[in-house]
Amino acid sequence: MGRRKFYQNPNSRGYHSRRKHYTRHCFSIDFFKKITWSSDVGVSGYTSDVNAKDLTGTISLDSDFLKKLFLLKRSTQVGYAANSSLRFSSRFASLQVQYRLISTDYKSMGAYFFNNDVQEILFSPSFSFWQGRVNLSGSYGIQQDNVSKTKATQTTRNIGSLNLSVQPSTKFGMLMTYSNYGTFQNNPDRIIDTLKIQQVNQSLVVAPRFSWGDRVVSHSINLMSSYQNSSDYNTVSKQLLEFNNLFLSFNYLRNNMKQKITISPGGIFIKNFLSYGNTQSMGASLNISKNLKSFSNSLNVNYNQNYYKENANGYTFNARWNGRIRLSSKQQLSLSAALLYNKDLKFEARNFTEVYTQAGYSLNF
Image (cartoon, rainbow, N blue to C red):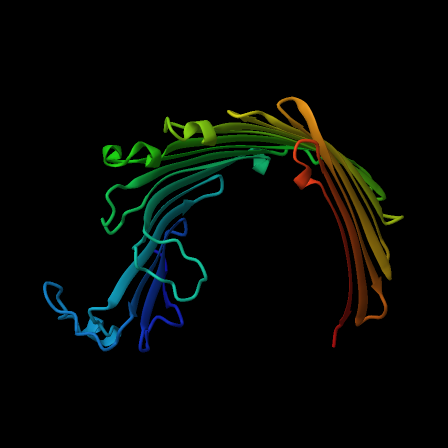
């Protein structure tokens, strides 16, 4: 059948304080070296008033485990979370099914932010062809909130993505990704029109790359194109939230290993199709860097011309220089300077110039 691995978080025995309690248990089981089942379950409890009366009523407290673990008062909030996955993997394919559930009052007591009130199921297959030169992976999942059934409506998200990576040779490769995210609410008749949520977001990215050269001088060209669409089916908010975005970029890189010099010019084009007026930006960039043993520096220059409703609407120019001087094996001096200039032909309040300089010294013992 395989091997079993049972393990606990260092805090799995639970800890008691005047306000919070926490326990967590994890396990992993392998079947026939190709199937793995793993789960992670946690329970948390917060007591805001330890002087409150004990929790009684319809909730059964007969379990000795719960009595030892929690100081249950009427002011206690108990939450739970579970994550379980079943994964099959082979040389050419893999499939993972994952289920996640986090209640409204669950707190991780170890993370600054932890998403709660959510349950989701996710399917993630992947395939490899042509000795690893072609890889196809994807995922599809359904996510819902209102786990504790305390809200008037439940919001559902459909999450889907598809990734294709092609690398037929060392000189050419391409990455393609497609994603589709839909959000809608059940029982929409209970919600006023301005608060209804029903949106679909789609994006497509195509990024080919070319490379050539030898051990001394290498060259590469990276292209990227993406299209993003957001559709809002709320007749009130669609005028502000619906949009289409087109992004194109070009980057050439030349690296001279002998001279330690890297030169990389590039270009960018962005256009947003909006209901209240299209915006557009076209720009060019140049990056130059030289790295030596005791001294290295780099210069980055960018210029972008902005348009609103097909008319020129100003430009943005920024330049930044970074330098590093190695004084000894343990000492280093760093310098940087930057200039940012923004010109807006429609709103004078957006015109500004920023100059930034910084110096630093570091000593390693």
